[in-house]
Length: 313
Picture 1 (cartoon, rainbow, N blue to C red):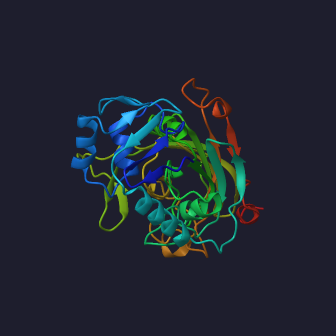
Picture 2 (spheres, rainbow, N blue to C red; picture 1 turned 45 degrees about the vertical axis):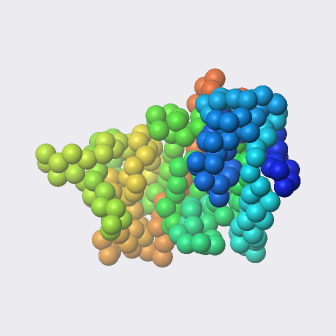
């Protein structure tokens, strides 16, 4: 992470690989949030912002190691603020369990009950724990989740550690190219396999998702499942999210009469247990040239919790 040098007359920083191929004005706006946009644009127009000593345009794209000089003197205040923010990240917690890690991606084994993102300032979550453990306050690139698991869902959770990984993997998720496999314990004996295509409607105020009514426009949603084991009125199923809508697995399985055990929102009272029996088991990344090379065809697995099998043996 490159920290800018600052003086009374301005400062200078060297562009990193995460800033490469990004517009100069957007990099500056992200780095200097306490500088008015007008001041940034004025510096670009009058030439007091320079790249490698040369006057440039706002839409110029940076190259790694480009040297950028700027006229304002707020860098020291920004650095102080970032150090203060870093100190606020919770550091006393159980370490994240690593399933895979390199310079671009960190896949961790999320425990049930932990939020993916904080719900309040200084709140505990996967991302704030990651920031604390990495010791990166966000000067250049702040690690960010690729997708998000509900609080009570356990298993594979992916964190982008570079801007390139975040852009390419987020686009792959948007295009449903990242295979996401879950396992769930559900009530009832399910068929050997099934394919649920049922549009969904979300009530954001109540954080509740329901199947779209006939004639109602909803979000396209598709879920595949296959039976792994069953015993009595309980089944263990493998579930593939063809699309990735909020609460999709929970709503789809409930809609066919097989709610997930422990689901206090979409399951009947009789199906409730001590916790939601839903686990993110496997995440597979496609072999695509726009991905960082080490991530092409990568498969990350979180073992199925032993307690899940206990319901069906």
